[in-house]
Amino acid sequence: MINIIGLGPGNDDYITKLGERLIYSSEILIGGKRNLETIKDFKGEKIELASNLKEILEYINSNAHKQISVIASGDPSIYGIGKYLSKNIDNKKLNIVSGISSLQYIFSKIHVDMNDLYITSSHGKIPDFDYILSHTKVCMVTDNKIGPHEISKEILSRNLKKTIVVGENLSYDDEKITIAKPEEILKIDKFDMNVVVILDEK
Image 1 (tube, helix red, strand yellow):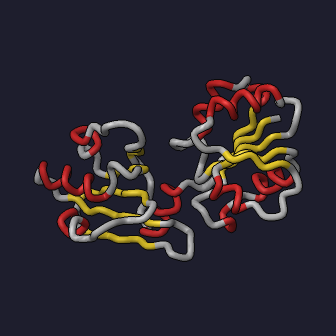
Image 2 (cartoon, rainbow, N blue to C red):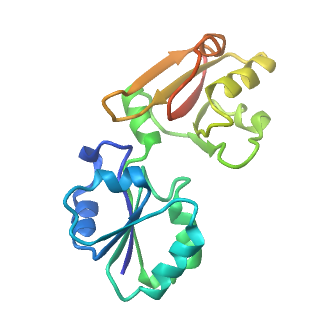
């Protein structure tokens, strides 16, 4: 069986009991460097996942008789590796274990419900900001090209009244959550690994 397991937003306290049990009963553990470092005392083989997706997929398919777990930050079905592997591996051999996403985490921290939330990402694409900013409640998984500054500029260029929430290093010891207007966000030099929430100003 091939497990795809969400580790949660980062801190290992957020790994589900089911996910943890499956990880430690696996023969092979595949994941990004930071995720692999999260899993202590694993007795099996660890394989680092980076830009080698095709090689990893070939390896998984040729070793499908073994107990393999692929670990990913957050929830693997929310802009994660779950989509890619589900399309390329026989689903009868696949078991996806949801994790707490950074989206869920940040909304719990700012005490705002996730009802009617529009979820999107800026990874590897140019977002349609006219469409995105037409929503009253948005959460965007960002990358190093389009983040808080670029989002703020898009809001200001349309003269919209929005509040921005930037969650950096969520669940880690250096977590920081900033709630501000777009013009205030632009005054901050840089942001670490983050997720951005965009809310209509009240």
